[in-house]
Length: 515
View (tube, helix red, strand yellow):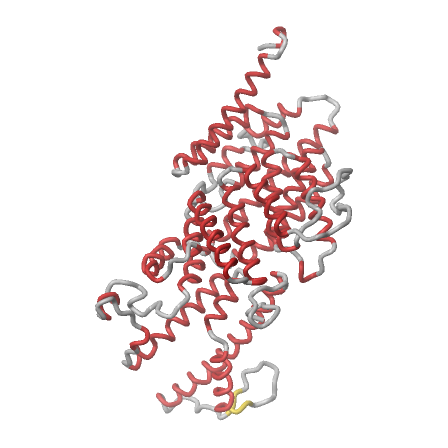
């Protein structure tokens, strides 16, 4: 229940994330309940010894609510202690992190660290196995300077701890642990998480490529089986994510198609959409490995709608519908993947003017976001903030869909593009107030570019090059202030292209129509 492996010695699992979360949480609740029973009994015994007026300790335990059975105290304490010892805290920490329970994972890591130094602190026993020596053999040389050397984190999975602190948004602690542990690890994957959380997507892309090259060298020497394939797919997915963040959308699409070609298996059949799209073309994505489909198709969908490649997006949505409709419960995709696909489906429906498809897709996307938000909100605001931004994106697409529906039903024949521009720029109560919403958003938060990417796609759908160019300029200025000069250069180039296209359109107008 905690390793989620299909077989002994394997780290892969086909259990869906929701079921894995339930299984791990059930085990954690049982362990916490047993620990609580044991602690209560131990505290009662100590109180009875310290004070004569205290109630004497019972020889049995009966903390189980609604049970008439009395459990022998000595036997129960021994059994609970034996059970807790057989389940290492490190396994609990890894299982909690794997299902997104980062705060609980950190709790188990802290408990494991305390257990390592308990004897030296409370019993005065200094165990040399928990100390590092420098090259001259001096134990105290490093112990006085570093977090690891002070035995606080000695014996702890520092890679997992850095990941957990990064997920919780505590970058300072993550960086401190990285400085102390850099001399003990040369794995490039160890620094990828830190680079991503700091917004260094170009550096993350380089580290992903380096890690993938090392993985391929290792694989040629010794076949790693299913686990090696899973690790390679994870690295490739990270590369695509970095390309999306850097705005290299064509490269992201090409990488996705190349990875799919490598991971694909023979699968026949014509895609049969389940969201209602009418498709009369054969999909180029109809032969996919299931794992590659789940992790890569949402990224490909995002690249497609941001580029305005609607035929490609149509292929991706149709292929996803076909594969997901045949998936059993354990093969169900995770909420983040579902959000990526359904949000892309809403964009496609908006482009095609199909309001019913937009409404249904956005409802599915919102359900997926809320499912992720419910877990993230228990840990920290920084963890929950990206999902709040996704809800904001859904709201703005809903506004655009409502405008399109209203204008299509109107008999006044008003210009849809002009109405879109007026509402987006308006600060009145009846307007959308895009500038005001963007000002209160944290531009430095992880995933903060999602709102801008959504608005840029909407400006193309509603054919508003002036607003598109203005948005690209704002994005370029934001990236430049953040030190993301590569993204700033790309944004300013798009702004020039948008304004150049506007000048060409004006030049082609008849003189009588010029303002």
